[in-house]
Length: 302
Image (cartoon, rainbow, N blue to C red; front, side, top):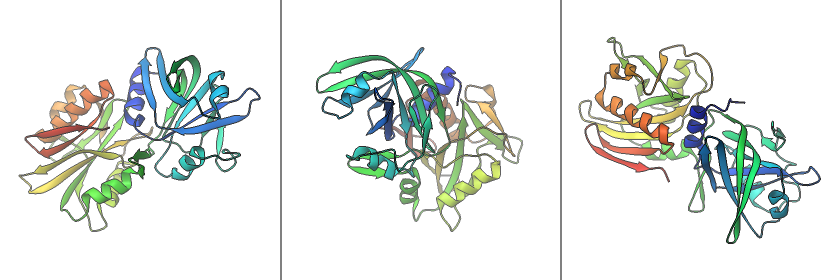
């Protein structure tokens, strides 16, 4: 469980807000209930609050409106079956999943990307839905990439990046972030750089996993954060934003994103990318850069 530090909460909100979630709670008899939702939004950092929306026609309406609290479980990319289970009429949705009680008593699913255990703050009528506003009492995030859902189809970071990078000559870099800090290593010339490598024959994902393994950290490949043409080296450069779990790296060190230490980064394009990450982390709104090392555009992550 992670402390309710505002920066840690901001990072968790920014990283996981667009994923598929399962909202869980307990009914008046103490029985667990839950449903799949993707209308999960940050309301406030001080005090920390989130909201979810529930249809008035939901079979869980009465139980959730009168519940003492609820939990939001952000599903990992390997949990499509759990999303389907909690999205369909099933007699016992918890029978086939592993879970445990959260600090506030709501069910927390195992192996999710993140969870937020909340006390009920307020319910608000909103047309054919009710808005449940919860005050975050405890939360935890992991390095597991989240599960997405776009236009009726599930998407996963691993599959999406493999499709985007197939058949190209690439340099892959690991933008490994944790609690507002980024991992920098020595570039061999006394300057700082991100872990990077030319994509090997077994693909971009395998290359990225090797880069992460060489750092000694527990981190999973995240989404593409920046994709630009490196004119000097005549290659495409892809940077993956990856969230790291706790632990000391074997190489390099974590540097605060707002630190002057970033000025020591040798590649101007990478420095610009890190400065963008610093600004976006404060707001919790992230985008994907495409272009070359001099100019391009940032497309917000919807």
